[in-house]
Image (cartoon, rainbow, N blue to C red; front, top):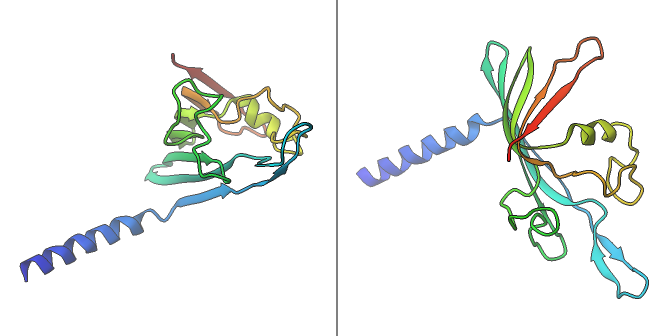
Length: 170
């Protein structure tokens, strides 16, 4: 009888914890197609990196909020991690996209971890291809997966004017 009560108490506690995070957004992209290059066989490929992401905000009170974002990129045709080949020296990563935590309030927002370059987000606002694929304005010249070990500050919006600053460690 005691084991049953303990199991029910643990189950009740875990259910409460899972329900408390109602402000987490799960997002993603799934993209695949066939690619035929001159002199090569037809293969499966993508125009935009496939990804599964988790983004959350927790209200801390007094106008302060804690934020986080974790993003995993993968190859749809074989399920392989899409984060270790060609753009990182350290090999495959558990989260091969954005991975950061932060605080935001009336004073602006600070993020720590792997964040987007400021120019990446600025150009995306007026690029009709959102900076992806062969039609992109900045194809191949921007890091669209983030910068490691970065501290980023975004100011609040003052009548349409705002700015950002980043500093990367190491």
